[in-house]
Length: 422
Image (cartoon, rainbow, N blue to C red; front, side, top):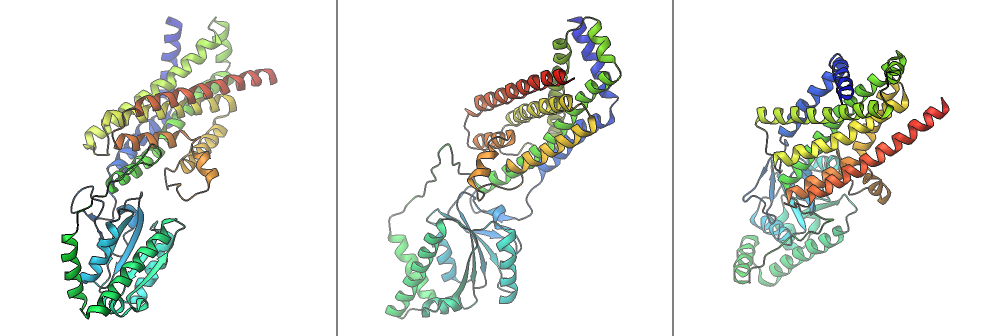
């Protein structure tokens, strides 16, 4: 035991002399704290928190609907140049089904050409499924049955709900035209008549049901999940390079014949590697503690879950990546090559795990590959914590244990092959 503690003290002194280790140990938690404290720039006005059947107001035409809308529904971005009670009624009817998340930008003072140009940009930059431009003559066009003068519709995704949306919108506008033709009422009278009829109808309640595969998140929870994904990406980078710093001590000890002298002193290889693994564990604990201190100092605890649960996710995810980088560094045997390898691993795994952008629209192969990435499971765990699923704790512990078993097993086989080749 004394020998083991001596090895730990020696490794701690070596790491504290490494400026790169201190940089990643302290800077990545700080950057992660800043990211967790960021709010999305696109403001949304909610009449009632968590309400699904509401029109979400965007601050301007450039605001992205994906940040405002409910991603479990088909997001409809509306450029409203009409601003009439009839257009308001049509949009409200769309939201009542619960399948569409309507996000509206007021474009009453803009020219039609500018709106269509913005729609072309949003078709690529935004993740709305439908872009809907309500023209200034919306009321007259709808009542006369001339929909080309009333609105323009851009279907910009391959969502299966697009056909249903088109049918529902067309049916709603056709009913308005038929009502106007049969009664001779104008837009204001029709709107008032329909609202009176609606008040006399039985009230219905739309309930969102979600299973274990589909979780219905509010817009605020979606924003929190995105920030947590970015924080995962930054903090795992720190864990990876800190693990490489531990591997660096192994490489230096082998090059300087220190490892040989340690083996000749009677210390077994298992004790030596065990000390390195404990160092990786200690680094995970230390980095998690630093992140917790940063969150406490910044007063940033509003990210959709209990702070202790969040730090537990960080610690377990960091432990996986610390072990991965330590094993890769020892197997590669060169610090620079190990740095390239772990950076490539970090970049690819973060992309495939969906930390930067959702994988909903990707191929089935990419979705399957994404479940090989640890970050994917921990991001899923965060979503479950949002909705209060307590079974997530046992899930992440089992996932962490599984990854560690695979990592240590592969590393053990790799070391044996390396010794045989030598």
